[in-house]
Figure 1 (cartoon, rainbow, N blue to C red):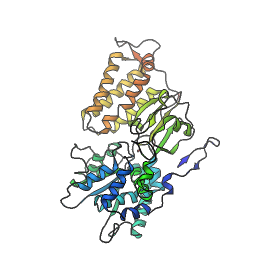
Figure 2: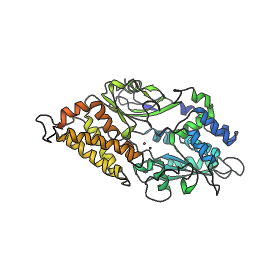
Figure 3: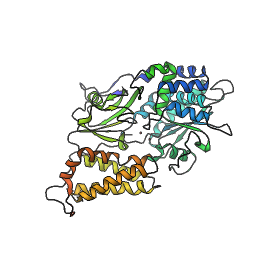
Figure 4: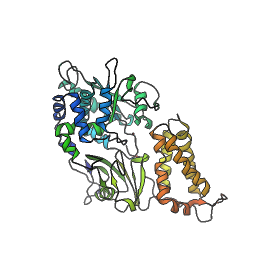
Length: 429
């Protein structure tokens, strides 16, 4: 883990992640000593939920894939390393520094569900990690940890690397599978779900980079160890990518259930006016709610914590995010394709002081419609930050920039120009 120390701004120190203490090979050895169903039971007993943001129970996903009919015997394990969520960069660190734990977790999944092939789908912008990952795959093959006897005599498992092309929507698991099959990355209709009919119509497990790394740790240390950390409904540690208006940005590890304020204290951001938890697809949490917990039952996140300081222009931050989603929408469904553009136009009207109260109410209703009517998580989550800013700071924004019902901008009520820009998307559904 890399953090910046308050006593020496700009310098870095390294403090060990829990994952860094896990012996490479220990998790796979423990898994291969168990029957596949017992491996699934161990993951289920740990309480591990997906670390990519959705929070689906990992053990249940594996059990469904293992039990699904596979007429030709094929099953697949896919690692979603398409970390495209603005503000999220913890998977990049894991792949750069602890790649063997991720690859080992994929191999454990192969044993658990009866798969012979794994695919690591790498974000296109992470092309610089390609040679490093290929070298780790080659080393594991040389050591017999991948290949024709990786899961035992005559029990093959191997992993190939697939490079994405930079589309944010391919972080959605079914769009990712479409891309792997050589088609345009667009979300599929569900059901069927990937665990029943995924890659090439076969049962497929798709998990996040961090999820696979924790699987290795769970098999090495035991499910009871993992389950004892965090809360009853959100077990284990969580890696957080902390960026924005803080003194010490970086990747931090906390047990799930940690208060937002404790994260800010560690990173040097206690003067923040708000925090966007979950990246561009997350929610804006005001300072009055910094006592809330980062957990699946309270404020969930795939890992991004973007800190907005006291001088940050919230409308500019919302504009930055909506501009991103307007560009990244695949265009397949109308609520997302049109809705993102309309909200972005509305923010421009707010900044210009020409947005009426009626139109602002229409934008809120549009955002709510997008959340329920969009086909995938992109459109369902893209209005979240804008809507949560309106929820917590709406009076401030209306007083600053909304026009009266006639549409004429009130004198002296235009939104002041920001003195600093919104947090730039950092290298993540």
